Amino acid sequence: RALVLALTRTATVLFAGGGMYNSQGKLIEGLLAVDPITGQLLNWLPQVDHLVWSLGIGKNTLFAGGAFSKVGTSTRTALAAFDATTGVLKNWAPSMPTNAVVFSVAADGDTLYAGGMFYNAAGKYRPGLAVFPPVGTPRISIQPRGTRVVPDESVNLTVEATGAAPLSYQWRL
Image 1 (cartoon, rainbow, N blue to C red):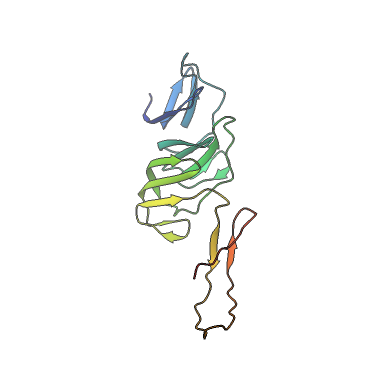
Image 2: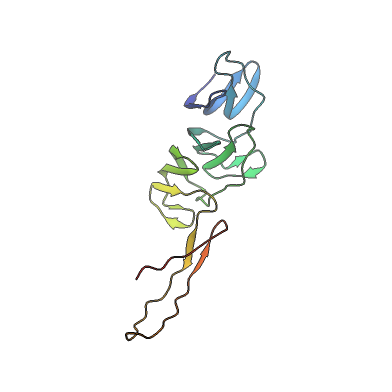
């Protein structure tokens, strides 16, 4: 029996997400890949431990959302990312509540939009809808503090940020 809940494809691979599959004599949980021309099962079986509800293709990344908690032996709660060419599970693992379920995903480049049953995503209050920017996207961790100065007096402003190098700052006053 097959329960296909999501389909997406690249030029050479059709990805299917859902429940349990018995395809070509193989029992597959959650996610599989087939040749879009021949329908032959490809040698890519990531062993997702529960339903995959949604799939999206970003910049060489296959995003999966669902009700799962593991991919193989790796913990991935409700969201996972795979290299769309090799099928290798990526290190990306946003912090999601253990009871989270992602019903829909949309990808734009390496940015992922996820919708479902959750209140928090990546440590922030995001009821039902979350945006995950690409890994390495600059983020200000400590904002500069406002200060008052008299005209012609110098001022020092500081900020802390993380992200992929090189980072640069531009102050607009």
